[in-house]
Structure formats: C-alpha cells, structure tokens
Length: 231
Image (tube, rainbow, N blue to C red; front, side):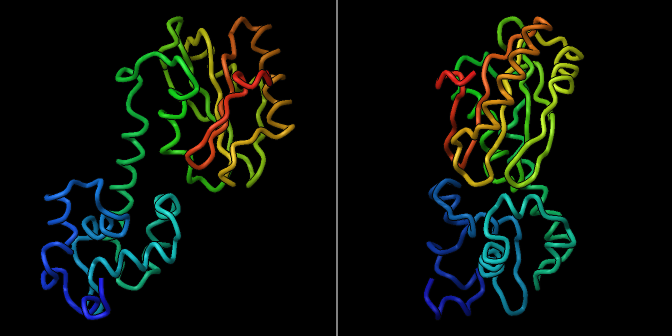
C-alpha cells in the first residue's frame, strides 16, 4: 500500500487491495495477518482504516499468539479498539486454536511425533511460558483426551509424575505421550527435559502405563526424545 493509499478508506481502495475482495478472489491463505485481522475488525476509525488498525495491533503485540493471550482490557488500550472489536478478535483467534485442537474423535491414531506436532503446534508455538501437556491414549493409540499438566516459567516446567499419571488413570489411559513448548522457539532438549522424561518413564513402568514419547515443540519445529533415544 502506498503512502497515498494509506489515507483512503477500505472502500476507496482499488478492489485488488481490499482484504475481503482479495479473500473472495484468491482465498484466505493469500492474505497477510494484517489483512485477516482487518476483515475480523470490520471497520476502522475516523483516522485509521481497519487495515491500518490491524497493522497497529501487530506492531504493539508483535504476534497473533500474543494477541490471542491478551485480555479485552489490554486490547482496548490500543486507540480505536473497543470492547466489541476486542471481543471479535479474541473469539476469532480462539476458534483458530480450537480448529487445531479438533476433537479426538476426528483424529486418527497417533503414529508418529509429526502427528503430535500437527495436533499441538498451532496452539503451543506462540505461548510465552512453558506449558506441559499429555495426550491420553487408548490401546489403539487414539487420543482420548489432551490434558494440561503444568505451566512453568519462561524456561522451565515443573512436572510431577503423580500429577501426570493420576490424570491419565482417571481418563482410563492405556498409554501417554507428553509434550511441552520452548518459548524460545528452539526445541532442543535441555538436561532438565531429559531428566524429567526418564523420571516419568520409570513411574509409568511401575504403574503399567507406557510413556511412548516426549515431544518438544518450538516455533514450527519439534524434537522427539524417543527418536533421539533420550528416554
């Protein structure tokens, strides 16, 4: 968009620059984050188009993940964002998370670390703290439930075997896969990650619940401790 275009309303822009028309013509995948947000916002303000308002949001919050984890009050701190627009933003981003976390009945059996990444990456890659989750599996390795085990600090998670296996047993799990994110974006296992995993494997053996893998998620990348023989 040129400097001249920046002073136009969305309706005054040429059709090829209007986000909604571009979506209809080329599909949602062709739009930038700012264009998608502009469609969600619907309207701008007296001094900003919805596209400019979206760009302002992305400058202020940096990522879609940060926006989705914000409160209505935090979003309303942006000039031009009121409660209605903030609610639309949070609702649309929450829907995106739920698509990534489609109900287990719609999922095939977990057969590889890639399946775990496909299930969790969309939700976890933008989190600013470590979240430790468990995929509770049946005897065919179908996902019965995805459960939260702990939320750690910026660079560490606190995981107790008793908390993990208590929840797995409660949901009649025959096996379990654990996963957590590295907010840095680098999924390389730390010594603590390896030590925690070995402790969980030992506890699971005693309880008769097999820990199949521990998958660490980064920003679009992942590492399976099972594949690296670190369990």
